[in-house]
Image 1 (cartoon, rainbow, N blue to C red):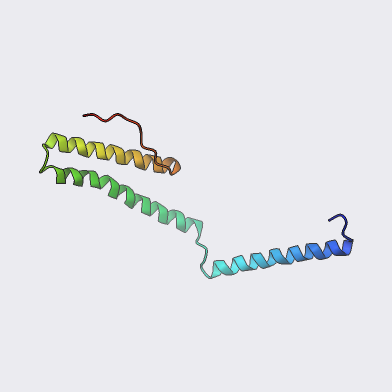
Image 2 (cartoon, rainbow, N blue to C red; image 1 turned 45 degrees about the horizontal axis):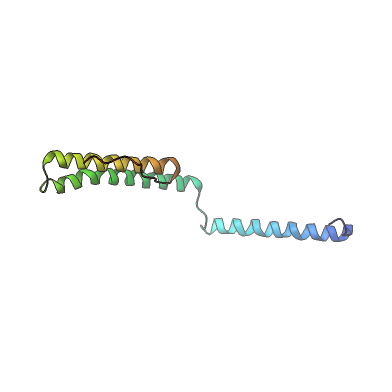
Length: 110
């Protein structure tokens, strides 16, 4: 850059400026076409999604226990329901913390 004459430097920076203006105009047009979504809209949609996900995931432990009640005694069915609920809560907690679920290394009771 230092080797270029002032006129060449001026042309270079004018070209960079025009390119930046072009990119800004292209971005603005993309927003107007609806290709970008507002951050607040995304946050609201994700919050609704995760509320529904949580309710659904917490509801299936009771449903599984109800289905198993015909095959095992009621104490075993409740124990299974509790175990599924704990695993579900653990998974939801991991998702809410850092987005990665790592199952705990708890020993299972027999």
